[in-house]
Image 1 (cartoon, rainbow, N blue to C red):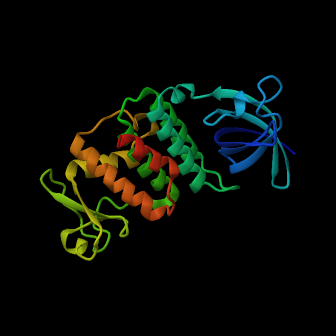
Image 2: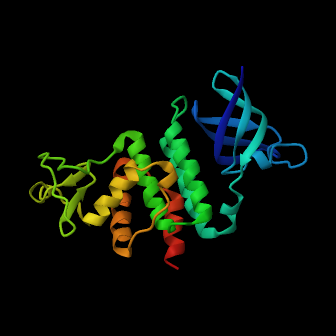
Image 3: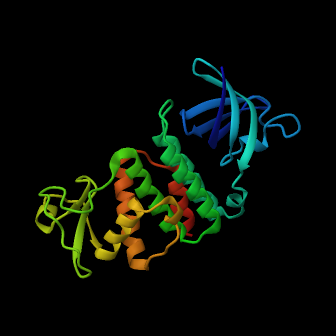
Length: 252
């Protein structure tokens, strides 16, 4: 069977002297493993079209669960990502995140769109890299079915007062916002301001086109970063090597 699909390369590795295996994130098929014959060679193979972060239209042959690359037309290489080590490290984290949460045969069109928008925004850096990471994590988890409750207390369902002077509590285990009384039942609860709560709501509900078109204060960024790290760690039980590398280079 011949398959034609638009996809993003989220992993690549060499097999033998010149062949390559790539992991494609497709809209229809989810995550699939593809062998690219001569994928390492620029003169006779698919070296350019099988690099990490390449988005293109791939023509594949399939037999049972085996996919083989026949041709690729590059749509976007996201080449500028490779020009800055910090940007590259964050893009690698995005790819590793997607690699972890996607599955073969399960289409994730919205997550693919989010990933492409994020990679494009990483190149322009209209927002800080830390903010973009938090935005991606929160929106991605919401797409995957882990949307936090931000309108009322998760436990008692009490509607929360929206006031700039109010301090709110967020619990990853609880799955969202907690009132003052209910928050006492959770050891790992995070205090956040109204501005951070508003920012989280915006991230979850705004269109992809507006997702990376804003910045926040250092205080909001710090709170948002902490919430997103806790929330991601709770629902995705994996230590990301790229995230550890980001921490290392930012500590230098």
